[in-house]
Length: 185
Picture 1 (tube, rainbow, N blue to C red):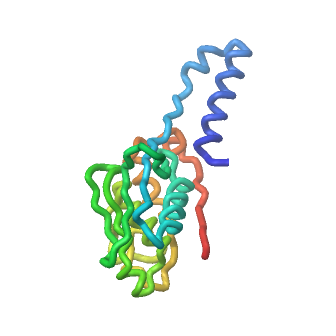
Picture 2 (cartoon, helix red, strand yellow):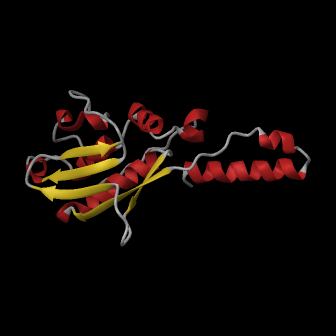
Picture 3 (cartoon, one colour):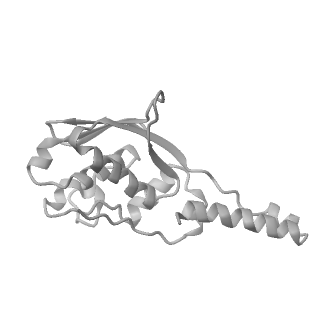
C-alpha cells in the first residue's frame, strides 16, 4: 500500500475513533493530511523511450509523497513534455514541476541506462540539480557515475529535497521510513 494512502486512511480512522469515543477535541488537533501535488506528463513524443519514461515516473511516485506524476489525459495540458531527440539528455524547467525533458539518444548510444536517464531528468523537473561527480547511489550524479550504473532510484537526500520542494506532506514531517522502488530490466 502506498504510504500516502495509508496515512490518509489512518487519519480518517483516527478521527472516526475519537468522534465515537467522545474525543472530538483530540481529533481536531490532529495534523491535516496534505494532498500530493499532481503533475501530468505527456510522453507521446518520447518515441522508443516511452516505457522508460513511465518507469521513471513510477519510481518517483513510489519514492515521494508530496508530488505524483501522472500521464496526461486527452484535452489536458501537461506540466511536463517528454521528447526524444538525437542530442544529450536534458531537462528545461519553466518553473518547479513544469518543463520539457529531452530523452537524448546520444547517451543511450554511449551505453547509459534509459530508465536512469528518465528518472534523473524528471528529478530536474522536480527541482533537483546535477550533483557531479557522484556515486551511482546518487541519481543526480547522472553520467558521472558511468555507463555501468543503472540505479534509477533517488537517494534519501534527493527524496527529502523533493518532499521539501513540494510542501513536505505529513509523512515527510513525521519521518516515516521510505520504501525503495527497484526496477530491473
